[in-house]
Length: 469
Ligand code: BGP
Image (cartoon, rainbow, N blue to C red; front, side, top):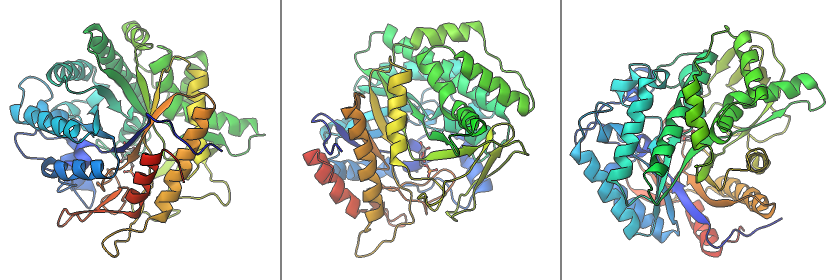
C-alpha cells in the first residue's frame, strides 16, 4: 500500500464561519436563522464558538508552526450583506481582508467558501433556496466577493448542498426543521446547484485568475446484502438522494435517466410532489459543467442499506449516545450496519475504503472532474483533556487510514491534490454541540486557549515528510 503523498500536496485544516467565529452580533453582522434556531432547540449557541473573529492570528500562527499550508475558511454572508443583499457592511469586508492577509503572511493558503450553511435570516425566512429569488441574491453576493477579494485564489461556492437539504427538510435538525419532505430536499439541491453553476460561469466569464469549485459531502452507500437486488436498489436510491443527484448536476449538466427514475420512485413513495425543474436551469448547469476547477469531497462515513417499505422514521443521535440513531425511508431503504464495523459515538460508520471508492467513482463516472481536494474528514470525539493536551490516538489512526486511502486512489490514477482535516481547532458542531470535538488544537471554550493535541504533532510529521506513518 502506498504510504507517500505528492510533494505539492496540501495538508490543510478546515473551519467554517459560524462554527468558528463567534461574534454573531458584532460589527454589524446580520442575523442568521441558526441564531434563533439553536437558542430554541439546542443546549448551546454559536457564542462563543472558537472566537476565531478575534483569535484568528493565534490559529494561523499555530497552523504555520504545525506545517499546515492550507485553511478552509468561509465568509459569513451576513457580515457582508446583513440583509442578504443591498447595503454592504464595510466592517465585515474589512475583517475578511485582514484575515486573508494574515493567512498569506503565515503561508497558509485560504480556500474560501461563500456559503457554509449560514444563509442570512432575512433570506432564510423567505424559504432559503426553495425560493428562487435566493439564487440571484447568492450570485450577486458571489460577484461582490470575487471582485472585492482578489487575494483569494481558491473559491468554493457552497459547502455541502446535500446535507443542507437533508438537515433542513429530511432529518429536520437544521432550520427550519422540516422532516421527511423529499420533494423539498431535491428542490433545494437543484436550486442550489443552479446558483452554483451561475456563480461559476460568472467567475470564468469575468476572467478571474483563481480557481473555483464546489464542496460536496459524499458518504458512500453499499447494499447490506450485495446479492439481493432489493438491497442493491436501496443503496442506489440512497446514493441518489445524497450524492448522485448533485454530482450529475455538477458534472453532467443534467440528471441521467437512471437518476431521474430514482427520484421519481422516491417521490412516488413519499407524497408524490412534483419538482420545479426549468429549461433555463439546465442551460445554466450545462454551461458550468466543465468549468469547475476542483471538486471538494467531504467524507466521514459510509452506510449500508437494506430494502425497506415501512413508515419513514429518522432519529438523529445528537448527544453521542451510541446506537440511538435510526434511519429508514419508505420505498428507499433502511440503514443497517454490518456486524463488527467500527462506529463513532454518534453512529457514524468508520470506513476508509469508502473514501477510496468514492474518489474512484468520481474519476470513473465524471471524467471531466479535473481535480479533487478532500475538503473535510476527521473524527468527532469526546476528547479528554489531560496534561495540557489530548492523547487522541484514535483520531491519528482515523486520519492515517484515510490518508492511505487517498494515496491509494492517487496511485490508481485519481488527481487528488490536498486534504483538509475537519477541524483545524475545535469548533462547535451544528446539531451536536461543543462536546463533539474534531480539532488538531484543543480549545478551552471558557478561556479560549488553544492546546495542540497529539494528533497535531503527528500531522506535522506527515506534512513535513509526505510519508504516512
Ligand atoms: C460537515 C460540515 C461541517 C462539520 C462536519 C462535522 O457536514 O461541513 O461544518 O460540522 O460536517 O459534522 P458534525 O459537526 O455534525 O459532527
